[in-house]
Length: 141
Image (tube, rainbow, N blue to C red; front, side, top):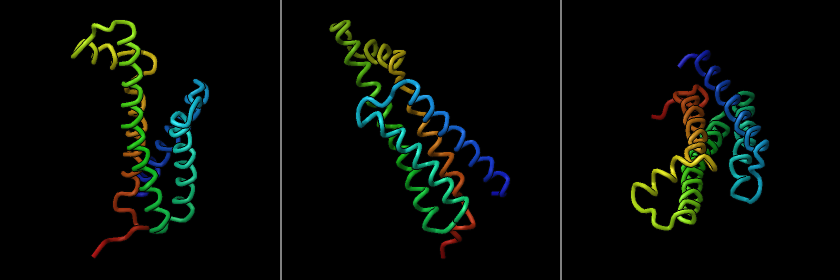
């Protein structure tokens, strides 16, 4: 991968994470510990981006990859949590909902948007793409 492509991936990652942090803070997505997780991971991502740009060592790149995996996992967890909250709300509104009708109403609910945490997964994948064949990691024998 060229240095230019790697810089573009880093820029996309930083802009995306900064945007998510800003959005979460503006929406007040900080009411409990679970809601702080994506904010904290976003801050950790920015710190790790600086670390791998300044010191692209094997250690910093592996730690960066670990944070990216946490971003992906938090995206899955967030989708599940948002969906679960929506499902509970839909069942309160209409206890007779079941099956695909319940799923459809829960996944399409506006608040909280069930698929919004998927952005964390995408950003984590962009971060992992940044490390693909990174010269700081070197080739394994």
